[in-house]
Image 1 (cartoon, rainbow, N blue to C red):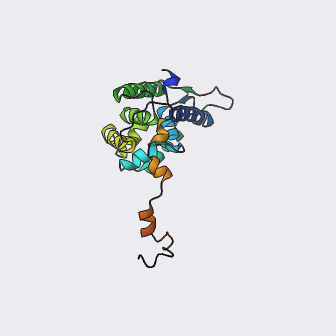
Image 2: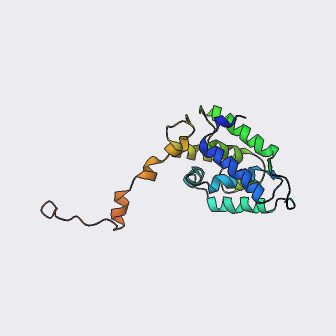
Image 3: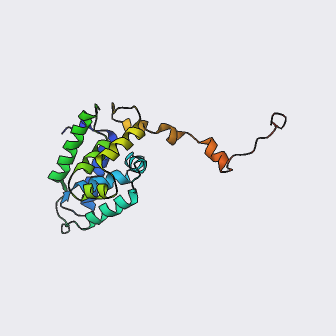
Amino acid sequence: MNADRFTVKSQEALQAALSLAARNRNPQALPEHLLSALLEQEGGIVTPVLRNAGVDDVAVRQANNGAIGAMPTLAEGGEASQPASELIQALQRAEALMAEMNDEYVSTEHMLLALAAQDGAAGDALRAAGATPDVLKEAIAKVRGPHRVTDQNAEDQYQALEKYGVDLTARAAEGELDPVIGRDDEI
């Protein structure tokens, strides 16, 4: 597993998962920590993918947080959390999905798909909310569009119109636009 093959967002998520495990004094970082990091990631694509799939991301978050809360903890001054074999397997599955989808880097959506396909509390939380791998693949295709993951900042290119554009039609329907001034003759 080569960290250089991960996008910036996926590296941030992995680091956040390790930090969350350490903060909770869990002996190992598990897939549940990674799912939590993906859900909480600012500017990430996981929450839009779940919403596009019709999945209640709040329910997933609550179920996952319950699983994290039930994990064993270390006494004060214990060792730093290490990645568990389950987390490493999920990351290896994400790498396989990257190749399957003809991408060049492992992105956060590959991680989400890997978690949804994996046994364990994170996968159970996703599947219970309706986020099966097939449903997620469709939602990812909608959110991603025709783009492939060809650089380490690929997630920043998704949904650019929604991020940087303004829906003037929706704003006009809500009465948020100023009336047209000085064009009485044309109207």
